[in-house]
Length: 82
Image (tube, rainbow, N blue to C red; front, side):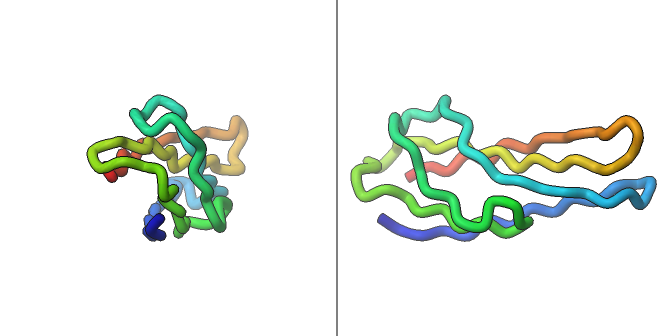
């Protein structure tokens, strides 16, 4: 298992505060769960499991939600190929 770092960037054109979160979207070819560290930060550490095989994919979502009214959320998918 390797550890990789991913950096997300989120801003709001209205200058509202933005909260971010990383999570695994369970659609990749790697069938298990991955460990994500610091999920509420723009930078996340991903612990790629030792049983992940070369060529398998892990899909992660970077979610950003502003504190406006109504609150707006956007998503960005990152695909990690082992």
